[in-house]
Length: 385
Ligand code: ZN
Image (cartoon, rainbow, N blue to C red):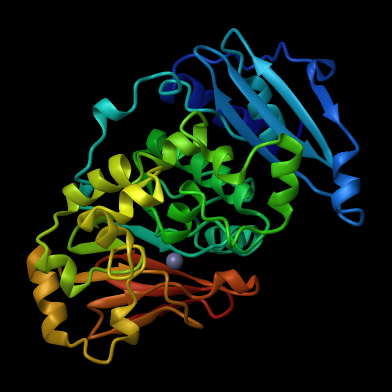
């Protein structure tokens, strides 16, 4: 038995016992239990591609149904008797079994406010670029070589837009899901904020979905948004994710807080509630016919606004009013892409979409010992002034 396997196994044990109650580590699952549904679909649509995707995990009343594609073949298995070892063995993460069948909406914290956090790292706009994402997270010690959490009590903020463009969104989603559960065990946290691309996918606007997922749609016989429906593990998690998060004196939002946002006197808690309960999953018509919902979902709302970078009438005075409104010192956004992390208005705005979407490079925002740094892939850590 090699050490990395042992470490992984031990890690799993720790999570099983401390985090989510008892999980048997000995699997009763046999490979023959895996039902292969079809083999011919992939070659019809993508004769030259070798597609692997998933898992997509659907919740029943007390069972879960798992579907995935391995080398152009669709597999499906239903898990009874709480034996989730198949998930760990096949896909390398443990399900959050303590919360799997609980009623979610009751205990949601819409405030999403945290103080006295000593270290955090923020990443944004990964857009399916799994390999750049793991390179960055490894380089700055968020994950170890086996892709397990190694950031202790630190916080990781994913500032939206894991979905669309690239072809490895599913891999990033499950990595972040795994890290969220592992971080909790260590006293750390992972926060995944809703970006415009999360919202688009959940609301069935599929213009930017990578063509690979069209194959997944055909093989599983469902539309892409339904792969993340309320009945799925990832879909349920996304429906409890915030749009606005505050940590210490920093406000995180995918795109930005516009002057119009504060004129409307929206609150952090209220907006998180509105997105989770009234915008995500709502019909277009319902949103269009409600001025509050359509503002929040629209171009001056928190998941689309680009005014800090593109509106020539935006001023520091306007920014100060926004910061005062929230009683914060700075705002961290993704969404508007640059070659590196950018700092505007003496660091009051940090734009952290460093174009990971191109698949070649990217940066993390690092906060430690009271200072902010760009965590670059090739040039190390550079202090932001
Ligand atoms: Zn965006």
